[in-house]
Length: 185
Length: 86
Image (cartoon, rainbow over all chains, first blue to last red; front, side, top):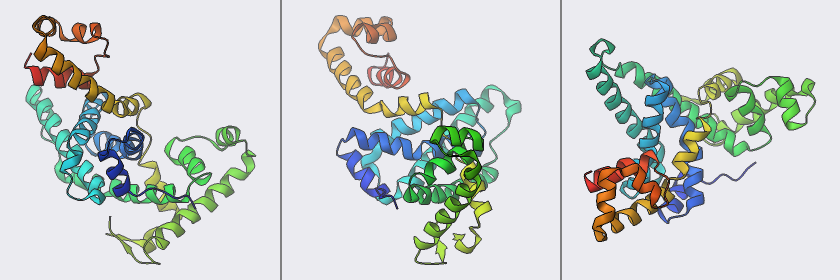
């Protein structure tokens, strides 16, 4: 099992000016921020990029305002949500037919993305090679053959590896909460 | 709240698909923010002390930033405009 630094530890190192920690923080949350922009609020690529950069710029400038280092994920989600809504309102002002953002629909997607981040965190704890295999298959849509070639594994074994890795992630999710229990999203 | 028993393997796979990687260039630009912040501090101090440099910034901010040896990234340019009100 990989030893994964907690969000709070990472934030604490960022606050101390550790640039490697900042790189890791961006890496850890970039998918989440990206998905909120593109999937949650359906921003086009250019607007999504602007919001994405602004989220991390503000996060970098205001990390000291964070009340609890553990709360970095909801804090980033809230920051991204607000900036997406601002951007959509600006777009609607310029093109009134675009309409107002559907905040309820976005809230539903955000709840699902939060759940996805919990699974992602469990995958990070499981570590490689499972992280690499599942990331390539589910997040990058790579074929068994491409995964096999990239990781120097027989393509015929990829399906069974994926299945075993999913079982490990499931086990990590359950173990993380002390057994089959409930998990705060 | 999420019911843990609801995490069957198909559901885990579906959730993982929701988080594809962000474009590499976006991630890299965000990771370079600390360096951009340091550049920003340096440029602001110089603009406050050097009237000629400030005039260059007011005339063409991006060019003046590049001439000073810094990459005029969107973060650097937008923050500099805000701070110097140019």
